[in-house]
Amino acid sequence: MVGEQTQSARHQILDAEKIVRGMRDTRESLEDAVQDAEEALAALLTSGKDRVQAAITLSTDTAATAELSVSYFVYASWEPLYDVTLSTAESAQISIRRGAAIEQSSGEDWNDVSVRLSTLPVSKELKPSRIFPRKLTAFDPVPLAKSLDRGPLQLAEPIIEAPVIIAEAAAVTYDGPGVTYDVPARITVANDVDAARIALDTITLPAEVFARAVPLRDETAYLMARFKNTSDEPFLRSNETLFSVDNQFVGLSDMPEVPAGDEGVLAFGPIEDLRLDLEVLDRSDSDSGILNRSNVRDEETRITVTNLGDAFYSLELIGQVPYSEQDELQITFTADPEPTERNYDFMRGILKWDLEVRPKEEIVVSVKESIRWPEEKLLK
Picture (tube, rainbow, N blue to C red):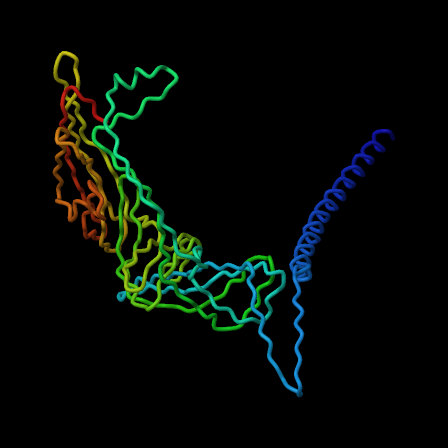
């Protein structure tokens, strides 16, 4: 009897624990619902806060109908949004759907309003600058021994190899030209809540599709698109841009600024079929002298690009060799095949190869570099 009653009590305890767990789960969901309701209510009540009021007295001798316009400054901001789609068909195109995110903290909701967006900043300087008398001073060099005779508590004047002319200079910044956008439809922007997102228009431009590989840092090549902004308006810099390839979403990244009439290059994610491998085949440091001070370094690097897929790619392969600005530090290199550009993108020592990679093909690029420097110096 005791055993049966104990077993029955245990079953009752387990059933009660199940009920308690269910009540806890229900409580958590109810608490989340209450929190969501409170946030929604707070968003609706933001426009009821205290604000500055203006009282205007109007008088007229005869009956009339008048329209009163009130202008005032409030805190509001916007940022550009883009949705970029690349079509890799035979005639490749890039479509850029432009939008904006608008938020404001004016103290009241903007209900059914017309909005104009502008990139022109409010001027930080309202008056011209002043200039002051320009005084020049020439200093004679002071020998080191003479400056040390002043005692330990005095600071020596700086040693100057030639007379120095000192003049004050001011930093100047310039605001570039701006553009404005009229939102095509009236919108509603709540006060002090998440930004309202709106769509502006879509611009479609012809594009050149290619691959770019940086084997020193990456294991795969990346899909790229080059285009020219033939529209009359610039594409602004944006930190929140959606990228798609053939209507398939590939990721979220930033959008660089592309002025009107300028060329832009955008990336659309890795190409898993284009594999990269960088291998240092030979690196030798020769020693000379009794102290075994090395002053010669030879290195050979092999880059292998393998196309595992069935697509054909035009590939920009980016490599690197060291460079020097010292006559006593001599750096030479050879490459097979020869790079298309030796100072790619105006950067010394950066190499670029323009390659055509066929399906199931493997391309090998070899780079040999030789470094020579004086025996009494160290290489850094």
